Image: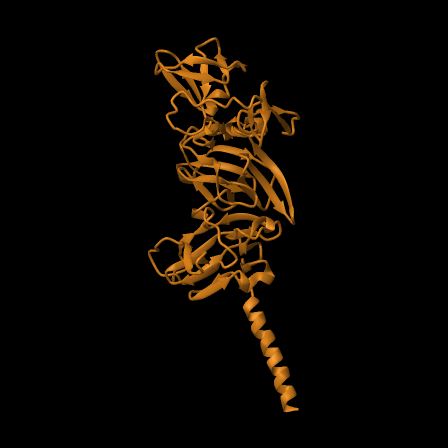
Length: 405
């Protein structure tokens, strides 16, 4: 009888230990704490919830692929990721978080089997007393006086939420895909007088160009923020609305720069997303949307589009290349690299005039009236050399643009 009682007691103690290992922390975690993906694998990697469960902190593998894991903050009902750490150096399943008085350290096993710190918070001005996940989705480190000494809101990735500010000089950077959070080629930045969309350093859209964006002041912008009624660009430390996009009331919305280069605002509910604002709405305004030298055509007012290639070109791997395999795309006018010409990045237009030359970025080209020809012929550039042009572009009967750089 005693052995049976001992066995039953041991069984329940084992269950209690198992439950404690998988118990999801509530709102706060305190120093000398460790969490790992394997410890919370049955909770899909979730190890911390905000007070009312609106947000989760988790070890997350987007798209359920098995090679890239991230420390993420997710909106719990829609499973939308609003922040991730170490996006350009993802973790394996061996990801492990340590919270100490010095801050957060996230480790991983490398190929040799050794454990290394892959990401950590920067040195802090005071010791950590607690880590908190707030109801707004902010992961914060607090000192003994409950003051924030580090927060994820100050380290945006590709998304901001209500309650978060994006100051002048900060940017949202797109991901490579829905399953790879590495930094992409698109950026959304807050400028002194507008919100700018950029691709490889070239502007291609401004928020003020949208029909439902309104300029209220000429004051310099201090920061951008979302709230329940729309998107606002504030000046004079928040006392003046400089630029605004008014939307229908919503309790929770996010602004995100998608991996395809479109800036969207959406309201989230239980596993559903309602898109309220898209910039640019016309997908064909986004550079490289159809790949190398691809031609984009808007099909419907809702933003659907189709891609095609110029005459004499064919689509290969989402880009256009000469149909004649013996030909290749030319180098830029000022290209001195010894790389194959097919790898040249075409990011701007160059005026090649015998006496001078200058660059036009993508945003400038949007406003030019251009006639193009698929004729391939040499043109003498500003340096006196010859560059072969895939397109001879005539701009308002001015000097031809000889090459797409």
